[in-house]
Figure: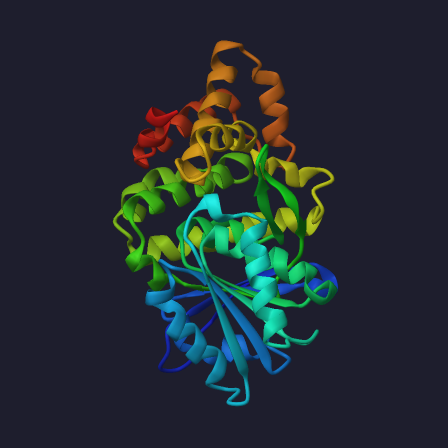
Amino acid sequence: MKSSLICVAGTEEIITVNVDLGCRSYPVYVGSGLLNRPELLSRHVHGKQALVVTNTTIAPLFLDKAIKALQQENTEMTLETVILPDGEQFKNMESVIKVFDAAIEAGMDRRCTFVAVGGGVVGDICGYAASSYMRGVNFIQIPTTFMSQVDSSVGGKTGINYRVGKNLIGAIYQPKCVLVDTNTLNYLPNRELASGIAEAIKCGLVKDGKYFEWLENNIQALLARDPIAIAYAIKRSCEIKAGIVTLDEKENGIRAILNFGHTFGHAIETSCGYGNLLHGEAVAVGMSFVFWVEVVLLIVPDLTIFITATGDTIEANEELQEGEELLERANLEEGEEQV
C-alpha cells in the first residue's frame, strides 16, 4: 500500500492511497472538490455506457455533479440512473433487482461501468450488482458519507442484508477507483458524521496506536468538520485498511481484525431492525461490549494477542479503556441508549 500527494497548479491537492492487489489494484483519491475533476473518473471508465446508482437523499445534492463529471470528457457516454430509497432497510435483493432492471433495459454491455454515488448502503448494493451483472462489470465508488469514506468504499466488500442477518449475501469485488470529495461532508448530518468516526477509531485500535492518539487529540476538530483533520482521518483510515486488504483480500486471516466490534454490532443492527441504529453506532456499542469483557472477565492476554497480531505493541487494558472514552467523546452514546 502506497500513498502519494498530487499537486496540480491552480487546483486543490489530491491525496492518493493505492490499494495494491496486482491486476486489481486501484487508487483512492481524497480531496476537496474532486467531483469537479472529471479526468479522475474518465481514466477509469473504458466503455461508453455508465449506470449511476444513488438514493433519494443524495440525488438532489450530487447526482448532477456526478453525471457532469462522467460525461464532460466523454460526450458520447450513454448514462442511466437508478435512484433508490434511502436507508439500511432497503439494502436488499429488491434494490439490486432495480439496478439489474435499469442496466438490462438500457442494453448495457460488459464494458459498462456502474457508479455508486452515496454512502455505504448505495456502495454495497451497486458493487454487488456490478459483481453479478454480465458476470462482472466495472465499478466506481463515489462515497458521500464519512462512514463510507473511511471504511466501506475501500476493500471490495459488497452485499445485501437478509432477514436473519446483515451482509449474508454478497461478494468481494474491487472497484476501479474510489473518489472521495470531502466537500460532500458539508451536507452530512452530525449523527452520520459521528457514526463514521466510530470506524476511524476502530482502525486506530486494531492497527495504529499513534493514529488512535491523533484521534484522541483531534476528535473535536473532526466533529467541527475541520477540512485538514477530515482529510487526514480519511487518508490514514484508508491506508490502514488498504494495507490489511493487500495482505488478506478474501478475509482468510488477518483481515478479520477489521471486524472488531462488528460481531456484536451486526447482531444489534439485526435485532433492532435495519435502519433504527446507524452502522457506526452499532459498531461503537459492539466495541464497548469488548471493552466490558476485557475489563470484567479479565481476558487481557487474549485481547493483547489479538491486537498485537498486526505488528503493533499496544497495551490492551489501557488502550481499550481509552477507546471507550473516545467513543463517548465522539457523541456515540445516543446509539447505546437505544439498544
